[in-house]
Image (cartoon, rainbow, N blue to C red; front, side, top):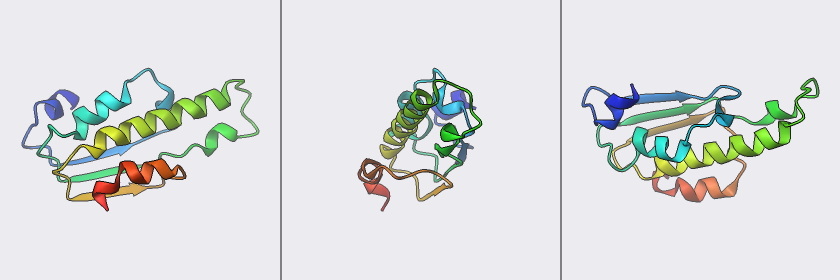
Length: 115
């Protein structure tokens, strides 16, 4: 799907990004992908949903991962980078952000164009 989005395919007018635990910490350049997926060059996407991005699972007491705090920081950075890419889009008419940790005040200024 990413190549079709990158080509600004007219058939893709709605997108859902469903973040799952662990995907934030992958080696993907989320700011670049955010720009590709819904950045300023994409004029076809009218509806965007971002769901399921939360960070409290990194604090789970049952987690034996010594790198939980580092993973949480990386996850937040990736999410914020994705939203920075998203912020450049001017074609989105409906934005849904659900079940996401928006505790960073900087995120609201990043997404100010949608409010």
